[in-house]
Image (tube, rainbow, N blue to C red; front, side, top):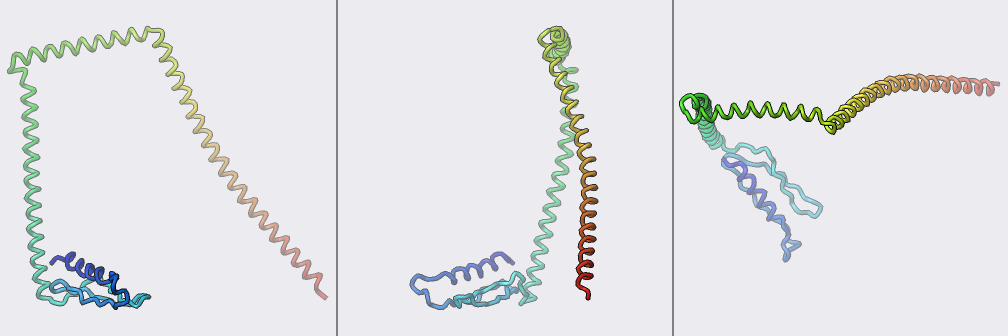
Length: 221
C-alpha cells in the first residue's frame, strides 16, 4: 500500500475544490468523498468556517475497513522488508570480505616495499644515497642552529620572546589570583548583604508592630 499517495490525493482534491472561481464567488462548494486506500479509510471531520464554507479535516489515523486486504498487504510488506534485510546483510558481508582483502593487500605492498632494495641493486643504491643525504642534512641543520645561536640579532629576538613569555605567565597568575579574590569577596558581600537586608526587615517589622500597638493604645477609651 502507498499511504503517501492515498493521503496526498484527498488533500489535492480538497485544495482544488476550496479555490474560489472568479465567475462563481457565491456558489456553494461541494466536495466529493475523497478516495481511500484499499482496506483503509481516513476519517473525515466536516466543519463550517465563518463564511459558511465546509471545511474537511482528514484524520492522520486511518481505520481498517477491509481486514483481508490489509493483512494481505501487510504480508507483502513484511516479505519486501525481509528481502531488503537480506540484501543489506549481503552487502555488509561483501564489505567485510573486501576490508579483509584490502588489509592483506596493504600488508603485501608493505612487504614488497621493505624487500625491494634487497632484490633490486639500483633501488639499494638509491636508498643508500637517501640515507647519506638525510644524515648530512641533519648535521647541516645542527651546524646552522649553532651559528644562529651565536648571532647577536637572533639572541636579542629570542631574549625578547622569552621575556614576553615570562611577563604573560605572570599576568595569567595575577589574573587567577584576582579571580579568586573576587570570588571570595563576592561571597562575603552576598552573605553580609543578606544579613543586613534581613535585619532591616526585622527592624521594620518591629517598628510597625510597635506603631500599631501605640495607635491601638491611643485609641482605647
